[in-house]
Image 1 (cartoon, rainbow, N blue to C red):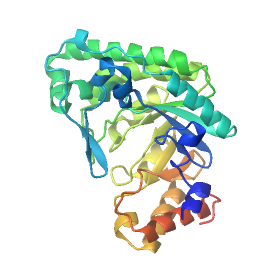
Image 2 (cartoon, rainbow, N blue to C red):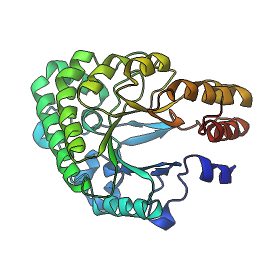
Image 3 (cartoon, rainbow, N blue to C red):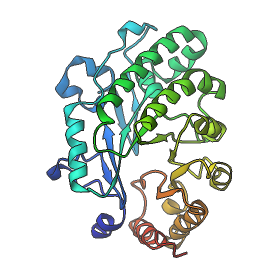
Image 4 (tube, rainbow, N blue to C red):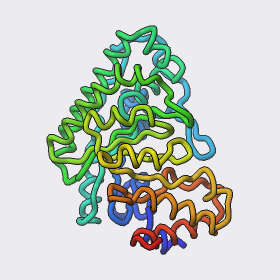
Length: 315
């Protein structure tokens, strides 16, 4: 099974002996190098602590705890260098390891989630309504940090940049579309434009149901959307309405048959999603989310085998 994983799917285990972080992952054609600005607080001083060591590990994920900013004070937001030499070295190592791969550099969190870490989810959701001047000023500061980061990474041997901000819940958005278009759309437009002006591909990661803002993503120049969770979004509708504008990564569900069904049902989950999303091109095959720990081994093997088969358009 491990050999199949190395040859045919994503492998996060090749990492450290080749200078690649274990959080990065390699697929058949794509290499994703993750920005890890909030993972390094133990080694890089107190300024990073506002973005790090605030994560409580849970089964299958984590949650942010003890947000440090109790008051809406922009001056208390740490201004940090998001791209360190370690990230630059990891990009170089990734390119050396796979000179033929398409390399994305991904900001694991971006504007909204960094502010969420600082203020806490409930508080920042209230800030958009009750403290809009603070929210705008804070997002402008974070935007400049990311623009500065792009200055460092765009000349490097990468092919694209992914911005990570989750806007979707399982059913609908976590914020209104009005909040998105007021606070996020114009700032994301600046980030996307900077990436595209450098001749790179721009992607966005947003979990959950993003149906209501897919048109907004297209408006501001998004090219690749991830992860297109079928449990939250109608992949047939999204492909039909936005497939001529966007390439999709993901789309293979990990909350249903792959975890709870038989191996054959797991194969069907892969096959049916790929049949929909590969029509006309514009699809990068992967599961929408990593397989949960409780996935039966037989089902995991079935997923790998089926992905290896349908990647050659054998349905």
